[in-house]
Structures are given as C-alpha cells and as structure tokens.
Amino acid sequence: MYLTRDEEGMLAGEEGESCRKAMELVVALGKVYGAEDLIDITSAHLSGASYKTIGDGGVKYLEDMAEGGARVSVPSTLNPIGMDRERWREMHIPPSFAEKQLRIIELYKRMGVAATCSCTPYLGDNVPSLGDHVAWAESSALSFVNSYIGARTNREGGPGALAAAIIGRTANYGLHIDENRRPTVVIDAETDGSVFSYSMLGQAVGASIGGGIPYFRGIDPDVDDAKTMSAAMAASGSVALYHVEGVTPEAGSFDLGGLEAIHMGERELKDAYDRLNTAEDVQLIALGCPHLSRKEMRDIAAFLKGKKKRNKDVEIWFCTSSRIREECAEEVRVMEEFGPVLADTCMVVAPIEGTFKRTGTNSAKAGNYLPTLCSQEVVCRDVSKLMEVVM
Ligand code: F3S
Image 1 (tube, rainbow, N blue to C red):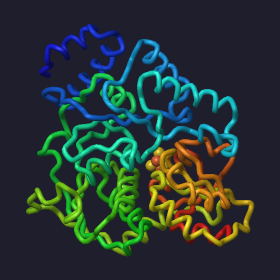
Image 2 (image 1 turned 45 degrees about the horizontal axis):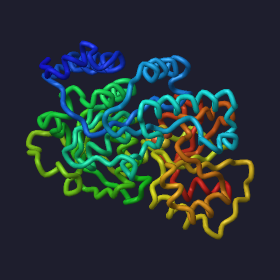
Image 3 (image 1 turned 90 degrees about the vertical axis):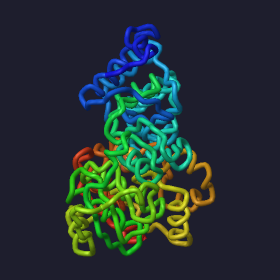
Image 4 (image 1 turned 90 degrees about the horizontal axis):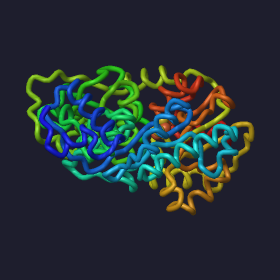
C-alpha cells in the first residue's frame, strides 16, 4: 500500500504510540481489503459507547488509548450509550453500570470526541456533505449518509472508526470508490407511504438480498422514511448503501441494464411484519430507533395530546438525542405525561433485559435486535397501534 512520508512517520511512531497503533490498524484493514492508499476523511462517527456492548475489555482498551495520549483529528461523534446521563434511575439502571458508563464517556471526551451520543448525528450534530469521505460506524447512520446524503463510508467497526478519527484518514477501498457504488439489484417497491411501511420494506429487502446495493423504484422516502429504512436494511441484512430513483443524489448516475429486478409489495411487507412479531403483550413500549427526529417528536406529541395513559403497568420510553430533546421542549412536555423522553440512549444498548421481557417497538431494526441482544419478545406495530394498549 502506498503511504505518504507523513503516514510512514505515523506508522513508525513519530507522532506517539496511540497514533502508531491507530495507523497500524487502518493500514492492516486496508491490506485485507486491497486498498492502494489512504484517503483523508472529514468526520467520524464512533460506535462502542455503551458499557453493555463493550464491557470491561472495551473500557480497558479506551483507557489505554486515552491514557496513551490518543486524540481525534477530525470532528467525531459518538453512538448512544447505555443510559440517559441524568435520568438513568428511571431506566432501572444499577449504580455500578452508571459508574462504568460515565467513565466511558469521560474517556471519549478526553480523546476529543463530542459525546453527543446519538445514532442520528446527521440530524444536526455531525452532518456530512455530498461526496465527503468519512469513517462512520453505526450501521443505520452510515447507510443513511452513504445513500440519502451521498457521503462515502464503509461499514466501519468501533475500533476502526476510532483509529481513522485519530489519524484523519481511512483506507481507500469499498464504498469510497465510484465503481463500488453501483447498484447490484433493482427493487420495484410499494409502500402505503407511512414511516412504518418503510421500516417493513427495509426489513423485507435486507432479509431478501442480504448485502449488495439495492436501487429502488416506485417510492419517495423523506428523511424519516429513509432513516428507518436504512436502519432496517442494515439490521435484517448488511446493506450499507442504496439508491432511490429520483430521490437520492447518485441515483441518476447508473445504467441499470442487466440487473435483476425484485418486486416488494404488500405481501412481502406483511411477511416481514409477521416474522418480527413474537409477543402478544408488552411491558415496555420504546420508540426512537433510530433516535426520534424533530418531526417524529411533533407527530407523537400531536397524537398524544389530550389523551390519557390508563394502563400504568406498561412503561413508555421515547429515545432521542440531547439536541432534539432540548429543541422540542413543548413536545417533551406532552410526551412526558406518558413516559420519560430519554436522551442519548436506546432500548437496545440499555440493559433492559434485567427489567423487561416483552417490548413494543415501531422499528424493524429494534425488532431484529431486541430478541438477540436484549432477550425480548417483541410486538412491532406503528405508533398509534402500539399506544392502544396504554390508552
Ligand atoms: Fe439507534 Fe439504538 Fe436503534 S443505536 S438505530 S436506537 S438500536
């Protein structure tokens, strides 16, 4: 792999041990994937923020990096953590967990990472532009910025994204290269236009094609539709990039000749829905996977306004970013009549399995991970149907 003089210097340890380790990891990944060189990045988004997911081994790794002087050299944001920083007691989080979680945040901050802790940084905290090369972890977010914005990132893991953030570069392979962004399959899709149907569409497509780069015809997703569809396709499959005819910025650049076309309509979406639903009732309803946008906060508050929560046995959590919780004070007031609006955490990376066994969600991504990462049975419905059980 070709390295510049500066990069050779970093690899030789001229800029410190942490920088050397970071360079070593990025170069090793590049060699595995056949990269010819490194490429500058404009931002990073890091996963590996919840104590539940990284454990003591992850804390030790971060301590070694932070105490070794590692610092990010590009704007870098962080994925959701295992609890709301102030309201963790309302989430039934034990103090021992909270202590470790706060330590993780401190370590990232020490490395210069903005501890904004959201999986939707593209809604305000970290917004790439068309054509930017970035190193993002968090499968839903990287798929959104690749597809809807037209930035360029591979499906980074937590340590790879942190290493790239430290050296300000990533290996130049995969989705950083024009040729590799070509669609591999056409999806002729039908939805009923609701966000929930986009979630089911993403679920159906990811489960059907696995990886690859779908090119959608027949749909017109807005930001919220694309947010949930990106998350679902990355969870039921490993889709990191898709195009939507007439909507996403690169969609007009490809010749579709010779590509297989698959139809995804009512029957396929219903199959996806049936597979996600494994429970009859719920103990927790958790909304905000990916984190609720401003518009979703407005829509939920408008739906709840004037209604009463009658079933006190079911807890409700609304998950969003700190930024959006602050900006939506009026909506938060209405929503808090039903349950806490939690910032910087989510139902999947929080240790909910100690408290709940059956969870309701409107997200296909959460529907995939709640059983595997949180031992939950799942009810997956749109918001109004989920809320029927507490009204
Ligand atoms: Fe975000 Fe948690 Fe879902 S990180 S995409 S809310 S699983």
